[in-house]
Length: 198
Ligand code: 5GP
Image 1 (spheres, rainbow, N blue to C red):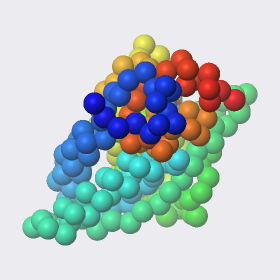
Image 2: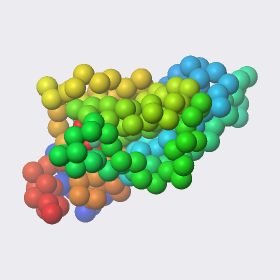
Image 3: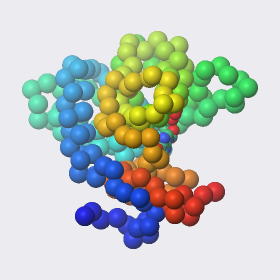
Image 4: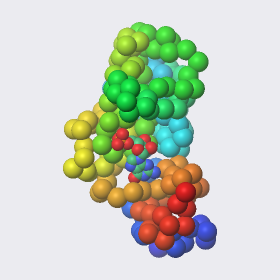
């Protein structure tokens, strides 16, 4: 019923969320965020690489709302990548790479754009690390949240969709760097896993 790039035809089991539905949901999230934030200013933080598509589309919607509404939110952007500390370190933190200066967090209102929350461990560690810089507030928007018994119980402030406990790809979510060029969010097939295994 939908278009899949020829090179991935046998590599996905099914389309879980078509791109059009993602677009519609993002429009609602953008409106909710603008309502809650008021005048801002707001710093949008994108967690790379998986969050880039969601971040770009959400920012785009907020820009459109800003341009046409009675009220508007002033916004700037930053990009980070995460590196987990080694296990034996067990500090409950993640190493943030890519942002110029984290002291710029102090006193500001932040919203994170995350691709997917699985157990929630990454996001909890990241929030632990960031609260040390005393931002005025941090909210998290995650496009996907998995329903999994492995969950730490962490829930983002804004959730696009709750999904079953399956490995999903597409819409910038990868499997060993493949599938980022797939529009829809899909469940990877066993063939796909084997084909792109490292
Ligand atoms: P957590 O710490 O919440 O267990 O894991 C979050 C991270 O794991 C995400 O940012 C993402 O990189 C990765 N991840 C978890 N589940 C999936 C999935 O179904 N597909 C993809 N592509 N990445 C996932």
